[in-house]
Image 1 (cartoon, rainbow, N blue to C red):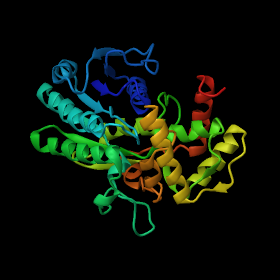
Image 2 (image 1 turned 90 degrees about the vertical axis):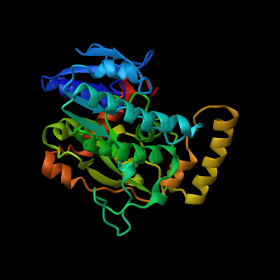
Image 3 (image 1 turned 60 degrees about the horizontal axis):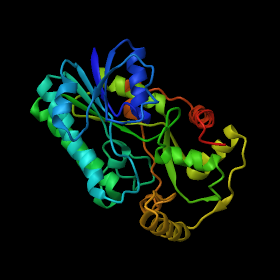
Length: 329
């Protein structure tokens, strides 16, 4: 099999590339001009230079490929221009799936997010069939990913077999940017987390997420969604786990929601508007923290055989990777 992988230089994408190579597949990666390629340097892949908003470059990249893994997305919980996020995540998805359809790709795996699945109202973790509530689409990222997922599923009616995977909060090696989840790990290691808010996430090893992509291609049902997740942990439990694997003390101060929100507004104003840089804590990030984002990956475990690596191991990999790559002094 020859697979085209978008977002191959990123956190999940580079791990998907490694998983495909380990399984003996040929891999072509879509890389933007000037992109940071450290995550895939030295790997035996074919490079196609292109951009999600350049349909002709996508048509060239898709030619001769049997499979598409569309992992690329603009993943940020703070965006000075929401339209940029929407174009990358929605228009870019339509473009790459159109190119794949025209090229005769046999099957596509679209990387969505649990951001498109509403947190539970009944106290139990949400599954793929959970009721959807529009008020949960907080911020440009979640809104764009929801629309993009709907667009991806429509391609099944156009003749392109599409399977959707919904990763939760991946941690592990290669979080080069880093992602919002990686920022939690990195802020903890840098001593920038004096306390925690009452929230929770579903955490999963990024290598399991990568395996889940290939399993979705091999076993996933067309038109179906699969949550790629593992353990539901409160932020306090995450920090305690990090403290154990990193040899640091966990913060004990519980920060009220109103205090975190006020801090976020101030950080966005000073860092975002005045300095033109990404704030350490965004308003959308705090607003999202009001609900525990707990999910049930049982469907992916049963139907795909999704691995469930202990999250302690995933955090240990992330800590070691950040330290080894100079993110922490």
